[in-house]
Image (cartoon, rainbow, N blue to C red; front, side):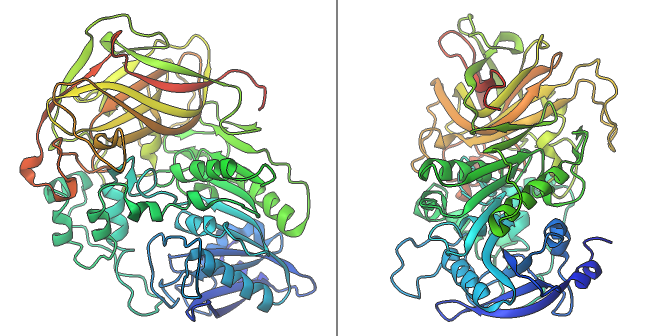
Length: 604
């Protein structure tokens, strides 16, 4: 079948080489070249920490299956194990910091390794046309981003896809300083194991003693117990535990400040339901857009996808929510046109500045900028008795009061399972709405459709009887009870009244004013808590309702906040305390969520 190793072997020749870097370290690289040697081809480079060639020199990589559309166009495709991973020499470093002012050949980073790799490939691989593109998803998306500063002259087009971008503010291990426990544990228990010598072998998988992740992490107790119980040999785990604030360690690993004077064309790719790296593509596009002259060719596409779904097969649905078409086919055509235009000089580019999928109307939109120019900020105000309105509350001394127990945290999804689901990003939230420690605010059914496009900002007025708290704010599309004809799902979840999660984000409350300098809450004092939630592109249809849910735990997706102002990574069990919280919605303290309403079709 198309994309199988046999199919690839019929079309491509393979060689495995060690490419020397400027400091003498060699990086393992496999190169696939079209069998037709009568013409020259551009090179597509994919750098990865995830074992580029596990099956051996005689085998063809399964990764080629996602590149069928590019193989059919005629490309040389190169995969490389990054420094210190699998078959490459050297020492690996997680999100290795960029060195902007290199003084010697010993000053290496992912940027220099990419430069040296491209230089070798264009000088030594036969039948290349002297033009190179770089792409990759997730961690390879980070390596794609790092190819952009001081780019090699042959590098003409780069596509960072779901790029790891800031591991404290928005990607993977932290969101607004809150620790994403389930993802970090799952990743480092396998990928984080040491690799003392070059090898094609993957480390042994972690043997989970309990298949219920909620129960597993509750039984571990304070997060400091993980190192002693499971992670005595995991290199990066101590870094996570000893850098609780946004210090120089994390700032050095943020590529965004270095995305200046960008010469290659850029197509950043992301998924609206990407549980790992939704922040990354939006922030990468914005940084390039704001830090470069107007002649930098910078574009973004955001589809209705989970992490990397655009590169796979069927992307017709996200869990229980359906789009009516396989949206990955649309993306593959975009990717093909992008690289053909800049690496082969073929065809019409025909791509908008921003190509964004509307996850409520299930349709693609094109914009001249992102966020769109024709949006208007409006506030969704919480009201007494669970109401929600674009009008400010008129009540006085109005609040919701409830008890939050960090030892009985709100689960992030309804069912019992081991691995973190991808589908929680669009899951039904009725299970959470029924808990007494989740506050629910809901509009009346919409008389007309309303489209939200761009940033979302939570703006809460809050008191607590303790000194610490997390905040989870969810934007939800409530389907009408009269819904009919909607596609069924394999879990038999009724779609009538479905509370579709459109977007959610968490803030570790100690960072409400500064990620560098955390602050406790003063018990009983009304405090404003304001934080950014990743962008949306979603139409709430006529008859649907807009809902906001607010809660203080999201377990075990996020570790449980003890609700006392301690270093959570060093906390003891007695530090975890119940607290009585209040969320205000009155004339003095009007809690709200700011959204941006798309006003017309102008600029689309």
